[in-house]
Length: 64
Image (cartoon, rainbow, N blue to C red):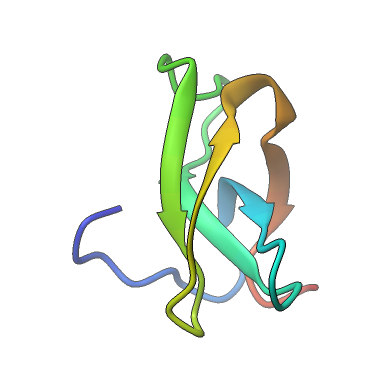
């Protein structure tokens, strides 16, 4: 997700930041997870981290 801001109520694939616990969105959720084996994300607090694709969560932005 380069410059796109997550929208409250929309569903995304993402992960929880290991430093602060904030959710970080990687891609807009349809039904399929992203195809890469490993993805890099940035949480709202600016922490960069990587996650394996099989560990990504399907979540609703703003519901956490």
